[in-house]
Image (cartoon, rainbow over all chains, first blue to last red; front, side):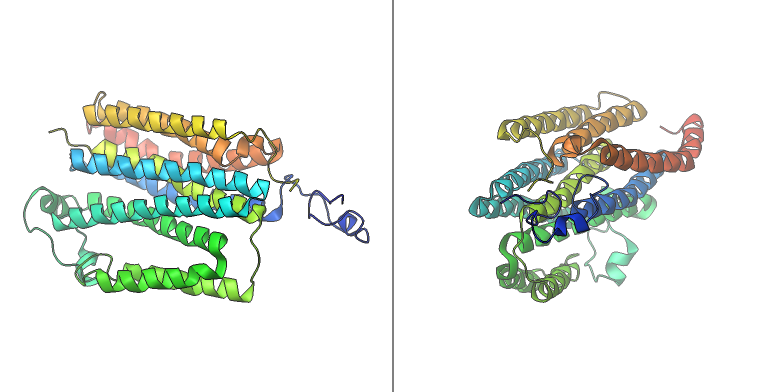
Length: 274
Length: 103
């Protein structure tokens, strides 16, 4: 049967296709909506990156605390995100073919890479905090145990608070986006069957992360994600099609794109040569 | 699915883009870790490489290269215009500070 190019309606369905205007951008509305959201979100990250660069320029000397181990860790994180973008685009291709099992497989692979990124980043944060990199809010708001009282990172926190402010601010914002992205992919890939898995991960993480750790309270973002996903899935249950996969792919690639600026600016510009 | 961006959907091109992104990342890491350039020049070089990487991601992975020209230009120009406005807010002062001797 011949279909309307814009809405996927049968062309003969009571002239329904003629009742809609042709799309201005030659794309369906969900995709245009996601592009507009990403344009606005890029301004959020753009402002943060400009602020970071400004801090970097006016602070002399700028700390360079990232040794080979941190750079290696951040490079592996970057490779995880780049690989997740590849698996995401393969999921979109599978969706266009209508190959639902492979859509699910590629989305699952993307989620695994995204989760690896979050775990590696969390370990990096915990290590830096343990060595003394800190913000005043960590202790008072998040109840984070104090790290080393002296040493290079403790001195930086004491004398150049712009560094931990910029580092934690930028990377936390990005980590939040990656976490939301993994939940979004899970919803599209597994629909309501993703909810029990997310609930188990949330409860396990909440129980396993000790009370002095910086992620002890922020891990409840997963609970919030669970609530939002449950509301979406129960009030508007649907079978996610190729359009939905392409739209969630746009979001995921954007998360990858932002990291392409954070990695060199935050890590490589603060490298310590032993 | 007529309105999904139409283009050559061979998997090969995506693997090429992925490989190019990994290689560019490796170049960035080597440049950053070896500290080949002075910090201001290093910032320029790393940002240039990041812009190339982001163009590959936006063009190929996000398929913007294959969208119609109106959408392509409107999105790119609007975001770039906003960044230029931010640049004028931040960088005259940053330039003044650099000229004061901060490196």
